[in-house]
Image 1 (cartoon, rainbow, N blue to C red):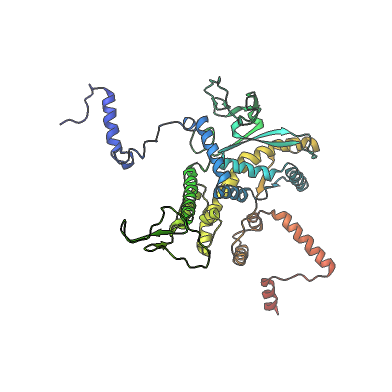
Image 2 (tube, rainbow, N blue to C red):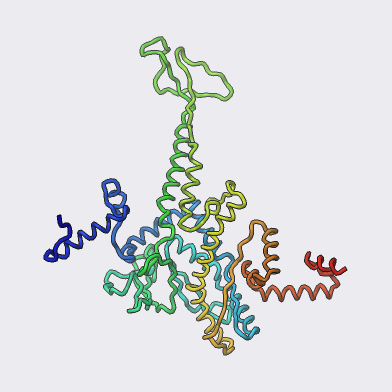
Length: 466
């Protein structure tokens, strides 16, 4: 029997048969009556079609609702932003002129405080989590009392959109692209569409060089972002619904202090009692019942014994999409020991480093470039802007056991497997600044006649020489 169509038959029949053969090799590609309903929502759409403006609007509003009304959602988003950004990044220039390096670093730090850079970066990180994306407009602020008037204006994703008349295929919901996929311009509403004056639909077009679009690209050819907690939104809803159901059941059971019942048959020897009548009870008092009647107190059976376990498992699943361990998401480490705590935190800290690197490339470096241009003009320093090597320092992660970490650090330095620059960078500090401070302290101690404390290694060496 010949299974394969002959060459004379159309190519469509051969393609259909080939597709059936290929799908048969993967269980997940099979569609049966048991899994048809489960995979019913799976569609073959592009990244931009799957997350079009209407879908993203629904996801944003629901994510914001959960963050505003769910304590766990609020805490998770806020903790993620604080752990990622911390007190803010610090700039270290790597030019050959040390004096110029210190001048740029000092002026940038002053500018960062005046413009609330750290606070805005934390807002950007929270927006990425609950809105999916954030927009930063780079504009001049004449009210700044610094030699650089560049400032950051945060714009919500709802304002970057198209009008109904836009038919340009190279424009994706307010973002226009060139033939190479580079953003050319952004169309921004002057007023928020959800504001009191949302009837004003006037747009302004901003060049791409003046706008920073921050979002996580999960698919190729994806041009707008969706909330990072999208996968956890149904779980947040389950958590709140289950908690409310437990509380409602307990309250309903507690509304009834007790009930009267009788084992006597109908029209039996029990005294007559009016149905649904109430009896006022007093504390620490005995109560007599009508003849043939008994009293029983309602057992609420709430919360159920699995309530705590359910919350733990669903929070663990919620936090997984953000690479966050359960004890940080829940704010509770009672079930952890030292080893499991450190092991769970390793993945989280790696995710934070990846996120910080992303913020450096997408936000900080984009800000530093125009900042240096304006600083160069304001100070007439004449530095070469094409060779402005630099690094960013972030807050270090505190160790659970500082004593063990200090011992390990000493061994790494003694074995030359690390250096001071690396060790100080782990703490989010500049090694040159710290060494200068140590030198100043030692000079002052020597001037005041304060003996310098010897390390254990120096003490051992002095003892061996004697």
